[in-house]
Image (cartoon, rainbow, N blue to C red; front, side, top):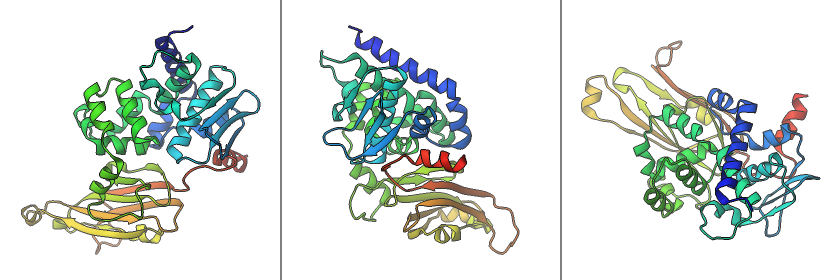
Length: 332
């Protein structure tokens, strides 16, 4: 039987080979997006369906294809899709996958199934490659030392379209965090992180995600749910007369629940910058683009000195036929 180490290496190599074949690093870097696992499954002409599954997260059958549950959030659907794609790419036989696959790579139990370990490894390296973390860190100015901060790890996972736990495990798999740091990160409750970010604003429940956006997110593609919340922390040069125009946020259907300035008075007196903090929920918005600009309000045609523009898809988890399939039909 193939060793666990060799199964892990097999999955990692298959993921890296597919990245190179599809030039995914260039695409993700230029589009500032996550890796479109469902789009790639459709592109490879592997039938894909989303259905309620009893006790399973997903299944791979060489014929008819891949099935993913509708009973878990989008991040788990994406992970499941990557796992099943790994089975397909490595030409495995039928696989019925339950929740054990979410923790299998970290398990130290002596019993394992090599094809499942390989598919788990493929999912990690395909959805959360080391180069994706490097791109995010460069964009946001995060260093390796910052990866001890669970808020930063949470935000990394959101931008990669992965769960907090999967992101923690991937960082450890890539040797970007030490074992003791991984243990500390996994002990943090997501509810605690969300409360910290919202600073007094209460959600109806704690299932929605909380996105922390800055000017470093300019041009980002956000995939989430219509119940998510957004905190935007933006440098504002009000001492020089520049203010953020947030009209597009409201015009785009977002409901603003916070708009405050965290200014340093001495800086403003010298024409410096303070911080503008916005909190917003999507309301009825599901698809669109937001363009926030920092301008001098009295200069009608003045150029902005900074901006935060992002495209959003907040339709949440997939159901029925994949959205990527419908996009390809429209494009044809």
